[in-house]
Image 1 (cartoon, rainbow, N blue to C red):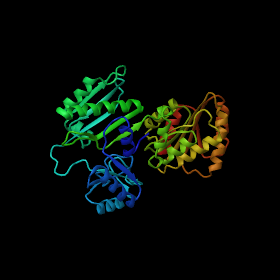
Image 2 (tube, one colour):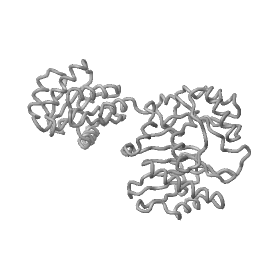
Image 3 (cartoon, rainbow, N blue to C red):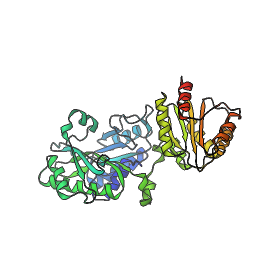
Image 4 (cartoon, rainbow, N blue to C red):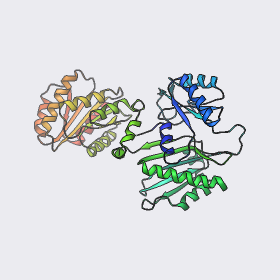
Length: 396
């Protein structure tokens, strides 16, 4: 589950990570009021206006701007709220900006002794250990840094049984070239950041940039936080942080009815029961020259109602040119699934794309007979290879 910047910062701050302070608002008038409040609390006369969407590269798309007075705060807020922000991490249509963060300007006017760093915490799947990735090249795309200057990226792996040790936090500060007060502040920052990562059951913390100010404070100026959804049962309050406006609408709808659905960029819709079979079906589609348009596991109760819901979810994607239904009848009987497919097809009405059905397992022969005699425009197959050949045929 992705969080907005302001939510991620609040979470980090609750664990002792120093952050760039700000107030989230929905209107230009609220932005002006927030700027006045920040000026009273921090003394800053300039403010940074930041679009709050689940995407990186906001500055490149015009979603992060500096306001030097209240008039500019109101104008910039009016420009950003309601815009469709296009960044390297969004579609061509961009993302609608519903709210902005009015933040203090932590880059003091005339300041020359600041430094920007990149720090993230994530799981190294190759070793099964958490890893702190960091670089002196903060404020830049880490991918570009890795490609052009890989020697400027450092990794600190943490043994799960011991957690982050003090010498490791000091090594991070040392490799970032810090000394004195800044060195101590960075070790404190890294320690708090890692603690927050573990305690919140997150899968990613990315702070870019981490700022060292001229008076040697170390501050999180941005925050990308992803919570592991599998651990939300331990953090009931985090569920309230979800912003479904930022999520794929079809995936949200599928989740609300208990279906496992992931939207992809292909042209063949998949309806399968069981995650393993779903992955194998996606491989099958690739081998047949197609591209899977989704991952969709209808589960063990593939009755008419669930099949109809699944059909409607798949058909929402205009890029889908064919649908492959691949069901193994173990607990669920294939003839019941077949009847569900027939009822769902008739309920929906006209479906103008080819549908390939493979039902294998309990009562598979009865299921095939039901499909073949239904009179529907559906291709019934038995073997995996037949399904692959038929996918290739209908896409040709």
